[in-house]
Amino acid sequence: MRALFLSLTLLVGVHHPSLAADAVNGETLAKRWCASCHLVSEDQRKGSDLVPSFASIAARPDFDEDRVATFLLNPHPKMETMSLSRIEARNIAAYIAEQKRR
Ligand code: HEC
Image (spheres, rainbow, N blue to C red):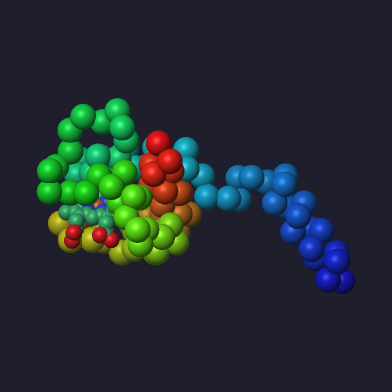
């Protein structure tokens, strides 16, 4: 039973990469919801000086993708309620995490 469960988990993992956080979708969401304040990508020229860029957030030593995803479920100061779904929040967090590698 346990072996069956394990192989099922493997199958799902291999054949349904869409179940993993989708950073590409995260980028679309970030450009729509976050770019008015944050620099969300390298090609963006203008954001607010007072708001940390996604690259600088990702580069923090204590950066944690899961924590950011949870954080995004609540509005932060000066930010209107965005009411992102859990999946959208995870996708954006995955996208932010990716900014560090660039
Ligand atoms: C209206 C402006 C505004 C918008 C829109 C906005 N933010 Fe922010 N965000 C801020 C400000 C200001 C801070 C700094 C807050 C602080 O330091 O207390 C911040 C901080 C953050 C932080 C860092 C929090 C920390 O731990 O220090 C993250 C992550 C973040 N924003 C993600 C996002 C994402 C993702 C979006 C889009 C879904 C978004 N923000 C949209 C203004 C905004």
